Length: 554
Image (cartoon, rainbow, N blue to C red; front, side, top):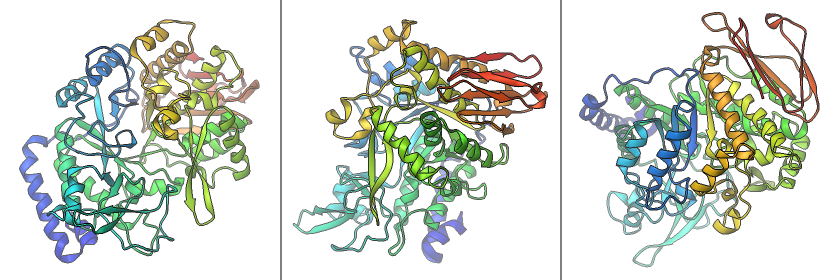
């Protein structure tokens, strides 16, 4: 820890910071000792949701409404629930945090969070890079009150930001007026409402170590480091993936390890694949990273009928059991990142996928670069993006579930967004109502109407929901799906994506075959599954275990 702190802050301030962190750990050691995280197994899966995802329900607090819904529908399917930011906030659906230690009163309270945590392992967000300009911290900064007077990053007017990597199109600096009438230019990577913290000040990092420990004490079992790639800024650089950013993640990991916390560090870095992998470090950084290339590659396979880029990419992943654990997902509260597939798929071919996504009702968000504005994210519900828009509900459900099955088959921890799980479509009114494109994927459905749809076996929602149940139950019963068990991609053509998981400790393997396209296809079976050929109907999913282990067909 001392070496990391010294690398970040120098030989004088670094050791002092390390001593203060060690003092914090000593104060809390008895509370956390001997609670190291258990290994993930095939039974583990994560559901991504807002705490207030469900509307209606009378006077019931949203967190309790969600807990009741999940108790009825998610028990036995998901072991983890990622509660997207439930703190008081001013914008960005929670990611512009006003108070890091409070629960938004409109959502519930810490007792409600605790009740949900008694049923599921909880994932929290630690929004490190920036905070709300409406927070008490930022108000104190503008007033020059210690210690907050130096907590936020500023630069002079006219600052040359040409080398700074920009994930958005708005200006990097936002002017704010102090009480004395002077103007200060504040670094705002993501929006004018989100001021970037100055981690060059060791007091800022120390405060977030305290917040991390508070979240662990409140029941967090997985901690998502939001927008972590932008943490450290140095003039003349891209201010992305800075070595001191990596050192800060390692320092947070060392805090977790020193106390033996039952807490997994997950980094959120929606960047090209090789850059994303760097956050594993040498096994001393994040324990888990998002598999950000998976959503756009699966989308491309489903839309174009070419799963070749997906097959090649999965075959190139680090071997299962080698240390890294991927969080595999297709959808989240954000859109589908475009940058992660850079170099993995032909740019002209993927441009056609973007155009088709727009034709199916999706939207495109842009970022500023030296060559102008370029796409960085597709905003849509994943079902509407990958399922044939003119087909009947049964076919659309099957096509969507084929992509989800491909994700669930991969080595790692699978994560399913709430709207994927309940078979939602694009909330077309959302962007105009809320003023941003990501709203298309963030509807808060009315609970009574949702329950009615799920109870109607003829509905799209019910078909998708039932399909997820079958897939997750089959997966949880077979050790070959455990994250440390090997996977091998099978040779295939066109829209077919197939792999074998295993063998497990008992010698059982599972063949997972998915036809992601609209045409019938076939797959040459490997010798351990009898050779021959397996015929696949359009959008068909076939999972089969060796040694009479059962078969699943969707």
